[in-house]
Image 1 (cartoon, rainbow, N blue to C red):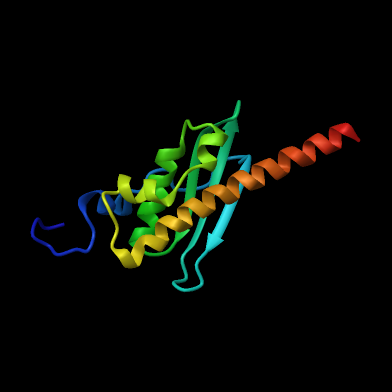
Image 2 (cartoon, rainbow, N blue to C red):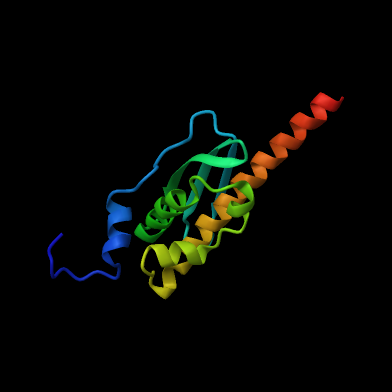
Amino acid sequence: MKDKEYTLYNETVMDHFLNPRNMGDVNEADGVGEVGAAACGDIMKISLKIRDGKIEDARFKTFGCGSAIASSSMATELIKGRTLEEAKNFSNQEVVEALGGLPPVKIHCSVLAEEALKAAIEDYEAKQAAKAEAVAA
């Protein structure tokens, strides 16, 4: 990329778009969340590996624009090592701040990252509840 090339995105966003971290699926994921935005067509999936109440690993697959990919990449970086309770309080604003900002029309991409994470946690908790019920039965 040329030094003077025009872009709507800052260096951090471009780095996470061009060199995404944690892309793919977690092997034998404990929780998976997939969300989409009908308005723009972006689809985001986050898979988690949970150990002792903490997010040990997080990976993503995103079909979408550069902001969606960068938001997914940054979100997975930010949530690793957090407890489930901490992750439940995760906000899209953390993604926006960590990326150094997103254009206003692209903020919804960070919201998708938050929603995918929370859907993955809900999936994990539903699986845990089902296991507990099976054991109790």
